[in-house]
Length: 381
Image (tube, rainbow, N blue to C red; front, top):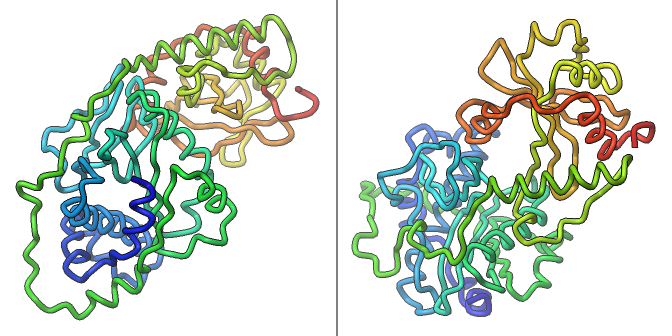
């Protein structure tokens, strides 16, 4: 499919009809913001719009080629019945906005701008970008999604399509992606050019709905080859890391060789008992919005603390459950070893439910063992 996309997709350009039809995937507020003088909300609306434009283009393209066997419904075309986020969910789901996501124990692991199946039954995915800022940590994200889909659908090759509204050719991350023959990099019209096409569009807007489209299918109907027991994969990896820490105190960077272990995005080691929280405050320190959190004040502000690491880099995180608001404060480590507030984790996401389910299991020794193993501060490593 990738060679076909590389040679054929370049000939397709968004038309006024496609661009207008794409607005059916946006709500009224988003549509109004498309031409807003306020840059930030306008760019956000543009991103949503351009993603919908690419989907609408593929609705047309897929009709004309047997290379695309199925195109996954999304946006306004997504099934009306969508499951609310809950603990224990594993697999592919539609969000309330019609986005395609894969969840592990209720946590959103990956979101796909587009999902399709080619004539050889390979499940492929596409990402749509409208700004260079979208490329931050992009390479790691694409590698993870390829690995995730490759495992779930039992395929050695996972085709990937990157569609951009601006020229990507000079970006090093894109140059590296372009070297992989399982990837296609496509540059279409810019959002400004597309706006120029539709700005003076006068006909009354009548949306063209893809009724009886021969290639459309629910993403949830793409048959997975293997079960997806994310919580089990997570717990197995966490236990292996604990064993490594016990064998070799001090700084470590465990290699994750198992396929299922490589699907884990974050390891949650457990909640901290009060003596462990006191040790963290004393040895490492916590600060939220510039104010130090002393142990004496901790339980006035927070009900619990959970220690974690992001993967694959083992970056340390401490989650603090706020007593003032229904949220967790995500604390990241600075170069001096201190933990500072980065952002809140709101209750509407599945990961919040997972954090809520975690109870204290770690004493001071185990907690400091994890922190010392992965600390980026020289005096703690």
